[in-house]
Length: 201
Length: 201
DNA sequence: ACTTTTTTAACACGACTGTACTAGCACCGA
DNA sequence: TCGGTGCTAGTACAGTCGTGTTAAAAAAGT
Image (cartoon, rainbow over all chains, first blue to last red; front, top):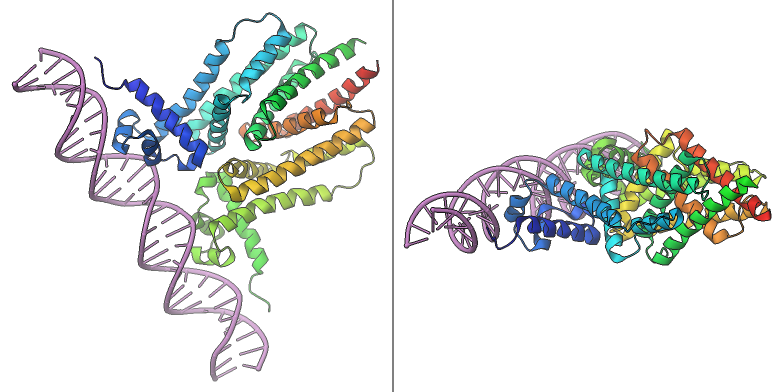
């Protein structure tokens, strides 16, 4: 059944239109009309692919989560915990345009999730996944003698640092460049290793 | 000229109405009508004190900054850098209801500042002030041998950690209690001191 | 070729938005 | 007592909003 346009493809490009509008004009401007116009469709057509605005937003949020997860899953295995942590963290920070865009949209959704139950579930899902990832990294680093042994405390610290850097990158992209973000993460990993070795002394 | 209600007092209570609506229903619900209803006034009355919605929002944002600054200024002098840092940071984190409210509203404004030039100036002002405060704390700690000597890197780390914790506190107030937030900060200050002493070994 | 289903476009409805305007109120100094 | 002034409430206007409905057009199946 060769359609002119693949339905899932249409949904994907509608989601990208959502992101585009959010980045340019903010989430409050991401109305059904504006998104449809951005995608070059009518509101009736959009409604054919997404029954409601809420459904569209949830799908747009979900898609971001999926993309981040698939990028992480695509990382080639790295036995060294330090290098693995460095790579994973580099994948989570907004170091290029694509991830910068995702980061901005993510933060916009996160903000609205405070008052929108449909989005808060997704936000919590992302929060939990990120925290679990941080805990895994800290655990592995600690086991290799490259981080202190207080895993809950170091997980909390890494997690907060990561989200703080993401917020800063969105607020001041001119100051927080890819280099400075990567340097900040590298510095923290170095500090973790130093703190651990200091314990042994 | 004794008015029935002091104009600045009216403005103050209108600003509190703004915060109330933002916390309960989100920034996008903070319309002129909703804020006026929350304050028990008509839109015409509100307009008498704020010529436009933008003016109202800017004033509400500015008031938060002023309150945080005045709270910091009211801190009694503390000679010990470690204890001073602990107190200042405790003042900046959302450890009680009042600061929790400020934090949530702050984040909402911060998010909108991405697409609202009138708010982005204020956001940048807050960012700069917080970074300067972090730098002062790190400099003092470092001078006292309680933090590493790489002041820019440690400033960046503390600043990001602080904002990350604030975001987490707003996202998951159940998980990030006052105790856990204070513990996270204390842990970081301990780690800074340990890392510094490790250098000497 | 025709029928059926999918896709599109366009418009209507009620609700909400920021802003503007006007009439009426209470209070002040004279 | 008389203006005058600060303040309030109410309403009007021109938009935009999400949603629903309807009808035409395009594609697919037969």
